[in-house]
Image 1 (cartoon, rainbow over the protein chains, first blue to last red):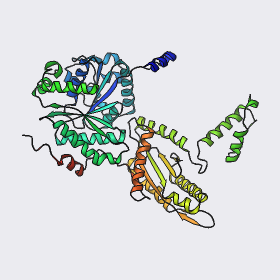
Image 2 (tube, each protein chain N blue to C red):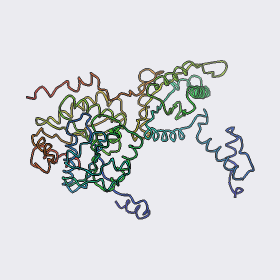
Image 3 (cartoon, chains in turn yellow, red):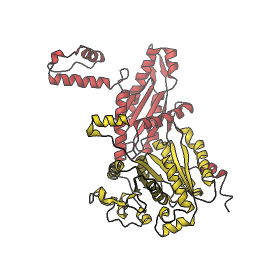
Image 4 (cartoon, rainbow over the protein chains, first blue to last red):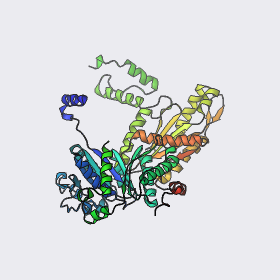
Length: 268
Length: 231
């Protein structure tokens, strides 16, 4: 700390600014609760006094606005096309955090181009100093947009459910991230679990296959860290249908408590 | 001010390397620029083979990885190592070893396009950076290099020739993704070790379709199924 302030004093033009921790939330398979986890995790972090921004990095098929019941007049699309400033596109969300929505105009950005790459990078570089935490809610699949968004993050959180299709896609995602981005730590949230300990089983199962098929080919092995399991809970369905944050509408429900615990774990 | 400059060693180095001395009036700006250009060239080449040295290779790699991330063009990095090079040195002496290094360096230069960079990055280690190399061509290019080295007799003096081979590892730069030269080198090196481990004189490229999950992987993933006991 003293070294940093000494450096700041000696060169005021290049003051080192604190930068938000950037967490990419991804899953491989769609429909496993990626956006649900992103927004409720953001609310959990905000509740702990963190300044949080959720960025809709699912440029092709954004649904953060639906989840948060927001009707944005200005979106990332307007920022990318130069119609609006970034400041005007950042909205206050119900859970005490900020949201930067992609909007439906982003369909044309579902493929990565040099322009999208530079603009996304610029947006992240601009918002990072203003928040404690930026959550990138990425799209489904392992597209180049998803991989690029994840490459900008300090840490990656993979959402998986205990179903074979979700586990296969989560495994493929981890494999690609390990081999092309040298991720050595991947955080895992197991969503929609049906019994106690199922999250741990899913995590161990994935780790076992990684140890056998992925790690031998890598210079540094990939390790999964289980951040928590979120139980299958009817309250989740209710809150999504009512387009409310679970942490706001039913904070005492089992799923809400579990997401809050993931938030605490993430800050450890 | 030129008279105050200590240029003797620089000029001596250029003469020794066969670079020729700078043209123009000694001490003039043009003459100094020409001298600096020659020194820059000298410091970016490997003295023995004349190939790019490790320093300029790393610069080229950083430039290329930025371009790949920016434009999404595929680029291939090959890491090459002469097989059993220590035996050559031990059996025929270091002078013969040097001739082998030169011969391999020159055949590598013959195998690539003008836009590609061939570098000597260590003792018997070489690297080739190939911009704009589509994934489908990677294997063919690397295999051609391997065959050309294998087919080349190296004259080590006294009408004695020997045959050498190379092991080659390769990896493509991740398109659109922010990566680092160090990681790219590491990925190519991992493949090089694989080629060595599989018996040398072969090419191993990083499998491009890493997102494909094989039947074996699935079997292990669901082998001890936790799904059976869900009511």
